[in-house]
Length: 358
Ligand SMILES: Cc1cc2nc3c(=O)[nH]c(=O)nc-3n(C[C@H](O)[C@H](O)[C@H](O)COP(=O)(O)O)c2cc1C
Image (cartoon, rainbow, N blue to C red; front, side, top):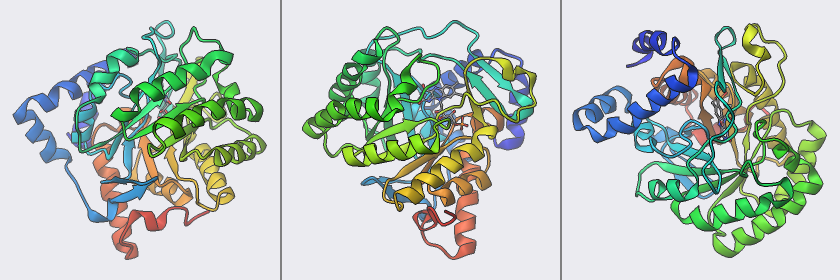
């Protein structure tokens, strides 16, 4: 089911509530790898490897730079299926220490005219105890774990939610992501402010040094951060020895949208985020001299947009909303497009074009 086949399926899925449509896709991706003929068919459709796409970032080798962003497979039920679609890594979560329902439904909205989504999920997830055994399986695909604070945890106490999950789950994943940028958990983004962040990162990084100094730990940031706050944040994360940043989460900014659904509350993702997240990525890359690895996410729905992110400074990229609009063939399409571009440029490795347009 490459791009044209997906158009027909999308027609059906887009008649359903977006969360129901997503859960159906996820369920199919969870079941598919268990059925041998289906797995073979999907491999045939989506398999694409190229040595130019192999890359090493924060000490880990990735077979390609294209990953699945947090929120797509919150509870780690479809990691193998997402691997068959060709992703080089999957970031599961956001999970919290205990299971929680999240906000009331409906909580995902399509802005089809803008190739965008608005979501106000509020971290619905099964909780760390239930998700842990699903992470434990050996896999060829890289696995990231995105963690957040529980909805009942006061902001001042939130550090213990994060340290509990780091201590309990770090050995099951390749990298960890501290999410302090979701717009749907009240107060969470305040942790990006420099005083709170400094105080928050101290115990988090102390624990990290004690239990898993070699496990990369990244911080995921918002596209709505001001440049001066970003500069302060960069000073702090570098001082604390954070391994990298994920830029960016979804946005509260509603500028330049056409679809009337933009009045819904929540985080905006998809194409309108593309330039905003690139600006943040470029700024981080310049300010840190390319020394702080960046995972670039926001509005990637074709190979050109993926290359823009990489040239802006992203060593790895992630997709979410693009998959909803373009379908599962997007990952292969992006990988092919990057590999062709590298070949045309006579460049051996995707790592060689990171940050070239900053
Ligand atoms: C429905 C939905 C749920 C999401 N849930 C999470 C989440 O739990 N944790 C997180 O860090 N980001 C979450 N995100 C944000 C994505 O990981 C990503 O940062 C953002 O959507 C921008 O990428 P995109 O334009 O490719 O979608 C979510 C996005 C969507 C659309």
